[in-house]
Figure 1 (cartoon, rainbow, N blue to C red):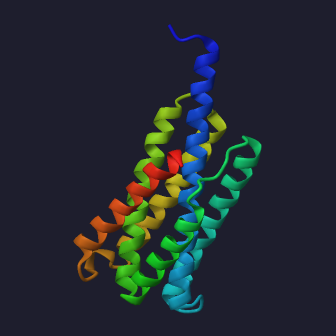
Figure 2 (cartoon, rainbow, N blue to C red):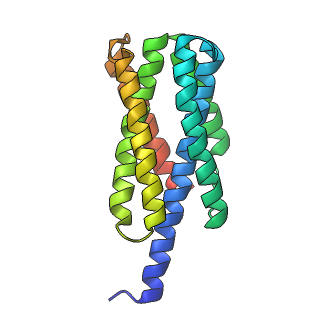
Figure 3 (cartoon, rainbow, N blue to C red):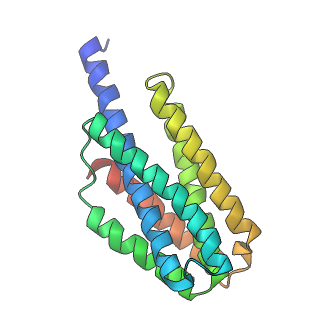
Length: 180
C-alpha cells in the first residue's frame, strides 16, 4: 500500500514532468513557426496563416512559463537544442515550400494532440486546472493540424517520409524533455 506522502510525491513528479515537457514542446513550436515566418514573411498568404498559429503557440508558451513559476518546475536542460532544432525545422520545411511547411505542422500537431490527450487521461482528477489547459491546447493543436491538411500538406513531395521523420523527432524530444 502506497502511503499518502509517497502518492503526493509521485503526483507532484508527474505534474512537473507534464509542465516541463509541454513547456519544451510549445517553445519548440514557437521556434518552428519563427523559422517558417523567416522564409514566408508575415504578409504573404502563407505567412498570415502561420502567424495566426504562431500567435496561439505564443499564448501556450506564456501559460507554461507562468505554470513553471507557480509550480516551481525547472525547464528542460535542452532548451538551447530545441531552440536551434525547432528553428531549423521551420526554415528547412519552409524552403521546401508551403506544402512541406504545412506537412511539418500536420506531423507535429498530430503527435502533440495525441500527447496532450494521454496527459489529460493520466491526470484524471489530480489537477483539474492543468487538465483544462491541456485539453484547450490539444484542441488548438488539432485545429492547426486541420489547417495544414486544408492547405495541401499531404500533397508535399515526400510527405510520408517527411511526416515519419518529423513525428519520430517529436516523439524523441518528448521522451527526452520529460526527464532532462
